[in-house]
Amino acid sequence: METEEITTSMKIFGKNASEFLTNTVGTVLALVNIGLAAWDLYSTTDPLEKAMDSLNIASGSLSVIGIAAGWIAGSVEEGIDIGIMITCETLEMVAAWMGPLSVVLAVGELSSL
Image 1 (cartoon, rainbow, N blue to C red):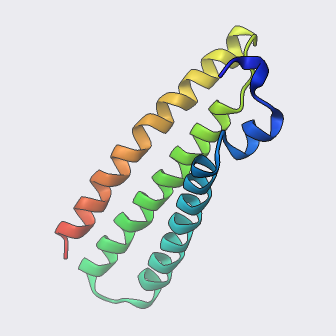
Image 2 (tube, rainbow, N blue to C red; image 1 turned 60 degrees about the vertical axis):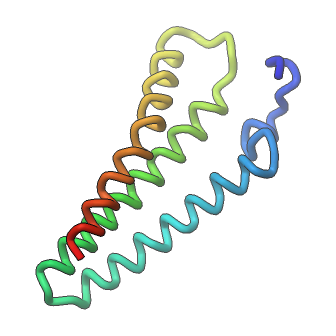
């Protein structure tokens, strides 16, 4: 798509329904997962379960940070100054690395079962 074709609503909600649902549902599920893990972390006394819940919270947090960074970086307009462009590139890098890091933590959580 050309830059002129992208509307403000496309920047906020995504280019199609699939992108919007991916970001929205992914964020909601990650936040629910963080909440349930925090609740379980508060109520358990087993140290292994505490470690598993801590990794689960970290994994969900990284997922939310990655989705938010990708969403913010995707909504920045073309023709911006160099400082904002560097910030946008940093956000894109953060978005690219948060997914794999959250998977690593999720695998660490599963291996602690």
